[in-house]
Image 1 (tube, rainbow, N blue to C red):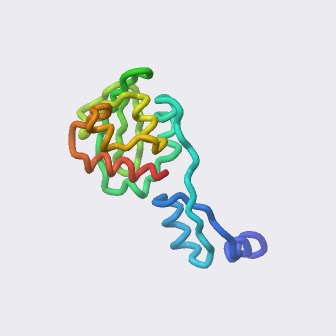
Image 2 (cartoon, rainbow, N blue to C red):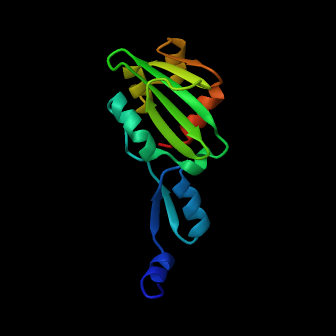
Length: 150
């Protein structure tokens, strides 16, 4: 430990973190002497199955503290799909279909949703055009986004 691990922990270096991620909080607390550089994850789903598959990979459990919600996603258009995302006690669960009662329902044109995730589509504009519709508190959508920083 003293010969290998400790020198690496003490080494002055740059650590790359995603803004708002659990890693950013951890590095700032555990390694205050290291320089942090904020970067994008670089991960942009190209399909709805890719979006749903990537959720567990990108989930930041500590960012979800206090969030207990069920989200129903209904994707229409080119890639039709229904899914349930449950975030409870810092655990994420993704299921096919709508399971249980949703705290927030999101109905979205699949291509518009993917453009929104890629930051090519403004959410407000998509809501005004009714390409994305939500039923429930918009704060829950904001809390959902916080769990998946880009």
